[in-house]
Picture (cartoon, rainbow, N blue to C red):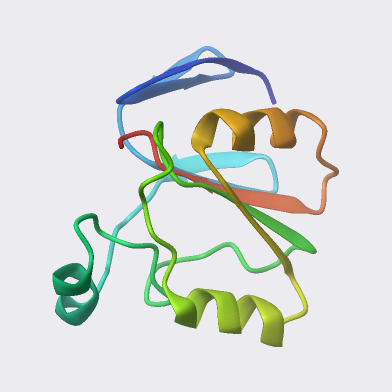
Length: 116
C-alpha cells in the first residue's frame, strides 16, 4: 500500500484519490460510513469515531488518524472495545498516522479522517 499524498480534505492511496474518510482493512480501502449517535454528535464539535461504525476489528493494532489538525474525537466506547478485544489502539493526527502505517505490519488496520 502506497500513501502518495495527504492534504486537508483528500488522501491518495495506490494512485486513487479519496475526498472522504477511509477505512483500511487488511490492505483494502473503503469509504468510512459515519454513524455517530446524536448524543455523541451533540457532545463534540466534530463527529467522533463511535463503536456503532464498521470498525475493522480483526487486527492486532488499529491506527486512527484523527484529521489534519487532530480534532476528530474517538468515543470512549471505542477505546473500551479495543481494550476488551486486546487490540492496540493508536490515535494520531492523520499525517502521523500515515507515517505509522508505512512502518506497520499486516496485522494493522486503520481509519483515517481527512478533514479537521
